[in-house]
Image (cartoon, rainbow, N blue to C red; front, top):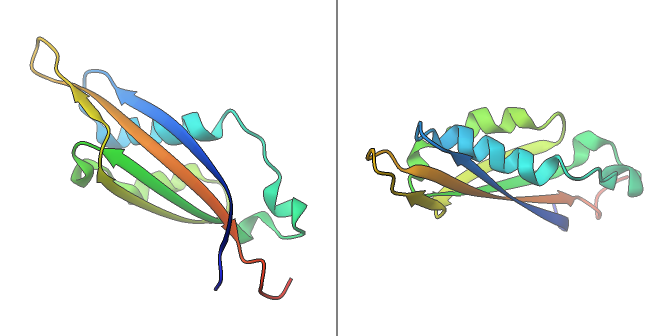
Length: 115
């Protein structure tokens, strides 16, 4: 299926004391989403379920991000979540770093297929 990327949103999330990379990633996704109301699918005459949503998470310990749980943030669309090395772990005096995670959300549609 050909994909045409139509927009990308960015977000930042943190876990201040618990080193919860999934919670920080969820906050980053919500940061990117909750400031926008984009009727992208409707603009192209497609249902919201047709949106192809690719989420890239950047965390210092990407293996500690539960990508499957993060897909539940999206009420519709075909969601793929991946995690890679990035973000920041900021040292704290107690030894548990503050975790900062970045999210990039790209939304695409198949504009070449049957409408």
